[in-house]
Image (cartoon, rainbow, N blue to C red; front, side, top):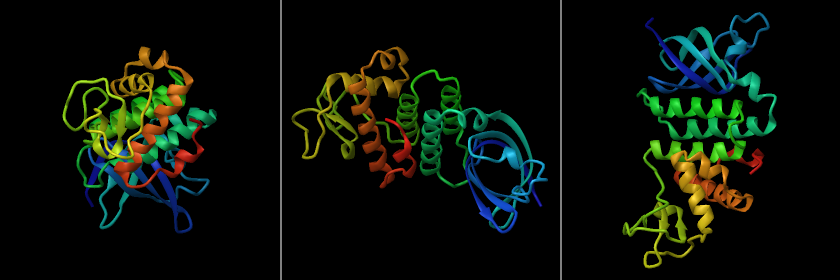
Length: 242
């Protein structure tokens, strides 16, 4: 039985049999990994508490026929402990975990950029560097960008004409000029477009200077853009205070 090590974030768990769980992780070197945690639901388990959602862990796994088996676990960052005490941060973080699982392919390929982005976003939530909903919006835009779906907020997404523009269309990839505008385009305020560009680039001074109305409008646009590319919305978003 071949063994390998990796670092990962626990995204989701569900029961298997009487005492086991299937653990879904986003790992640095193998992307999405689903593995069995044997006996982790028993009170005597050596590492059950380390295999909960949000936990950043160093794991050793044994390759199996259909599912790998977790044989060792060491905690790197116990994000679950801190986020569990902050409802806003917890719900935003849950949406991040679901986003990561939906965007990263289960193909055994490295997902270093997505992994590092998620770790950084969870750390920002834990430290309350910004309002949790803003951290979530920024995370989702940047995760989409890494996945190859970067939205355009400056030039026209269709013809490339330099902005600013006032029409947003998710299916077209971002902002559109008046000549390229299509039916169903939204018309966000200029302040919202500036905020969206700041969220995508990580320009936190610009993000911090935004007003509440722009933040609500930006969140709606981020959700619509994400849903378009995922082909359906995230269940966890209904619990996020945006």
